[in-house]
Image (tube, rainbow, N blue to C red; front, side, top):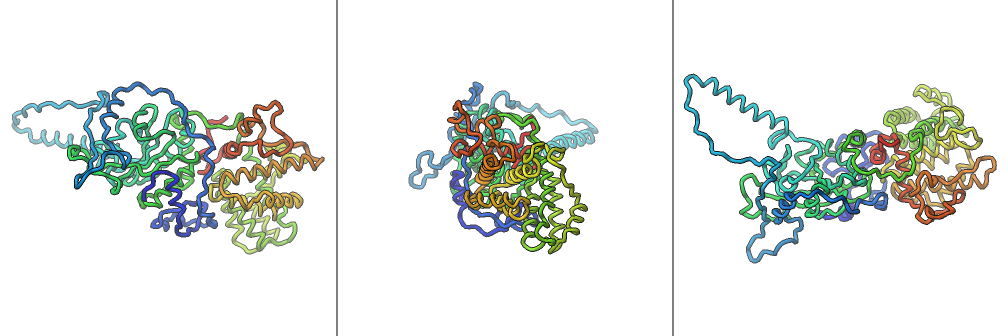
Length: 607
């Protein structure tokens, strides 16, 4: 089936489909015929979260809809677009045929711009008279000419050359490459009816486009299946006319073009000139979703599941995509467009939290593990292994994720552990117990005040980081694992009991997606701050987080314009804009992260 919108694709995706075991290493659902791929054979399998897709509020960052700077006055572009008035992007366009008449698409010939290097034809001169003994020289000339013709085809990926990867920049060739293919316009790769084109419509100054551009380019560079899908982009400022005629009114937009026998109409006989293909492509579906990389990836996978993308297309794993995205962000092209930062002021030490979460994670491996029993086994051992499993997939640094995964395997080799053997295993793994809060073991949580900073502070940072690095499907499971770990291994019994009360009061089991999970933990964190400020005289006052200076947009306009400002001591739910809170948390705890989820939020140029 085809679908004309993302909503329809997601509606199709909600139909019952085969049950699949989901893994953190490769959590995405593959086409039924590809499920035996080696990518799914990971040892750290998790139970699949609810298969129903939950749409996140599309208020994270609005798509650019404001008036754009005026495009350059390019008469040749306007004339060329008018000459192509015969293309059909909507199957209802044009007059209905009568009787046995066939309705055709008109493909009108048009002239190339002079700057594209139009070739003039000349009459060939008469051949030179044959020269005596010139056979060897003629043979040499023929071989040189043949080599000169063959090498460009092999290196540039011509019609019969090897497929080329990458995202191709379209211009006037949008029509004769994507919509009405001409054999001589293939951009160095396959371009027959079996090829679908994913086209990214963007504007150079568009901040929302900057958020999505890295994942699109990563897919274009890493999806090695050019015979089935290719990637291209079109600048909707420079080539505004073509975007308007394609019906693109918001950027960023990703549209999939393909040959659909049911929708396609044959080209008019007059259009079947030499070099013009006998088919045209139609828009099959388009994406205008949440500005998160995995949302784009899920859209492509949904298209493949429903047959709009060939089943043989294999997608790169999350680590490969994340690495490619981060590399692209350091390029000049990756820096185009306004930044979508909701944080008013970056921390002076944006990567300092990485030190704190490592210290608290190390402390959590030994704190209260053997407080109630000299043996670690049964349910408590299972809960610890589950916690390590989550950390092994959500820690922001790949090297540490691999180390934690190794520790999880080591501890999972035995059904029970006594304290001495457990500590010996940790030491051989490389465990280092952190120092006091005032030492260099902590940076964001460093403090000389009693009850402030240190291990508890670092745990909150670790929990926020784990959820920020979780995707839509796994975020609720990550939160549940954190809750179970706190109940079993956190040394403060009263704190664990209070966290259990908040879990029940604010329905921790009711979170459904990534944004819900991120904002739930943030809300409870602030409620705990409020309780400690009001009830515990031994600790310093704790203000609501984030402050107005840290994230002005996180507060409602009423609070921003109020002379009194926000309530810094008491929790007031109506004062916050949770879509901006989600963005703030993601940007804060994705700094320095190399996970696929966070690659969309981490800006290497941030100071």
